[in-house]
Length: 203
Image (cartoon, rainbow, N blue to C red):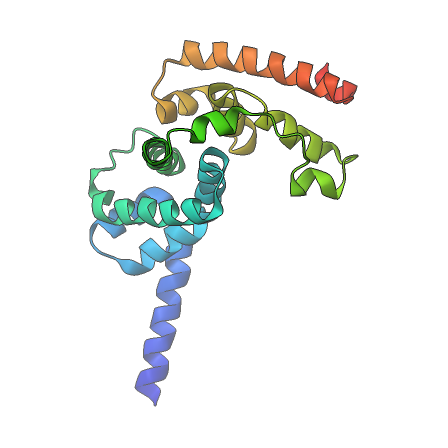
């Protein structure tokens, strides 16, 4: 019985130590096959990765499947991480690639899917119909009306708090292009918000 207690205590201490470890150190441990470190990294980032993917694919089931694929890739390729960016930035780069690949495959399966997606939806989404006076709901609705490129920039900068440099790394474009897209994205979003009657955010 004492041996079992000692083993459990040791396992608990290992988990606590892993939770206090940086993402970079977790990846090094994952590269060595440490499953506890993989679990900790997943718990830290799976929600962020899921939300990021969901904003691209707009399908919860697909997003859940892709999150699993992202972390499976992390398990397989942790040793390839070179530390040139934050681990969270690297994860979102993998997630973006997976999401865009899934979108391309979906278009091949249903060639009309993109055309359907471009048709404006006259009905409120479940989120906005709950409370049209809720500013955050109006903001989300306006963000969804942006072009895919501009929506992606807003998503990364404001929802995931990524810097211009990190956004460039995730998308694979120069920082100057990120700044240009950000300028036009904010301008377009301001116009949409003004049209929705949210003047204080449109300024």
